[in-house]
Length: 303
Image 1 (spheres, rainbow, N blue to C red):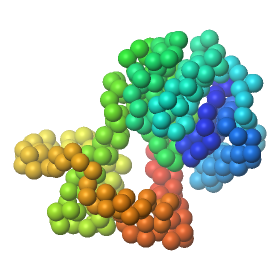
Image 2 (spheres, rainbow, N blue to C red):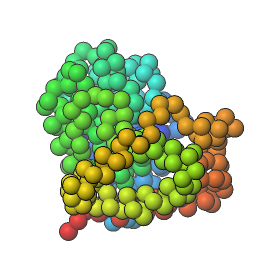
Image 3 (tube, one colour):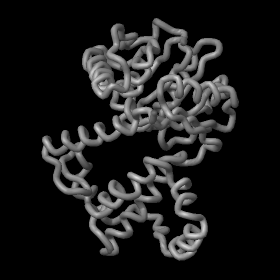
């Protein structure tokens, strides 16, 4: 496999790089500042070591990883940008990245919100440009979304999905570029109803989390929502849908609970306060460690 270039040195970029390296893919991570190279390399290696500790990949004897501030090792079979969600920044990065591709190379973006048609506007060959959307923590969450823009060639999507499988990911192909793609639209539909239930006094924030962890999440992790409805019976599903769909929230504004927290500077774990209350440093670390332990269990192949 040709080398892959990951542009960016943040949380997502280092997780993507770790997953690629774990599959033996020669990976170059490009960062903006030379002084960040040691920290970015250490973070990728830490994530790689965690994959090995979870027995999801073998302990690597050789790590095909380079972190640098230039692209001297091109051309690349795949270039994926994972920089800030700013359309002007991403456009500039993608235009420059296109020049680094091999003749049959693929240019990808890890965007979670920006239209691919706008990101591709400055490219010479938008046929080999696609979305390759990963989820945090990128080295552990199995899902990736392979997303086609208006001019993306079908072969580009096919090859990107095949690469995803080859590095141990579970790809879905998003057939049309819609805001939020598939997973985030599903997530935010559930979150909208969750906020409505809390704000209407039906339950607490903690109750919502317990309902998903102990019920929906556990069942859907096993067989998915549509398969769960098949298992329950479509007659039961139809009757429940007729009763519930008209009563679900269709609120288009940001929930007041979220607005009030943001107005006082709360930003979740990174600020020490969020929807679930206060997060002392030890609790923040415990939450992340528990999440990763569960994801590692779910990432193991079913035998």
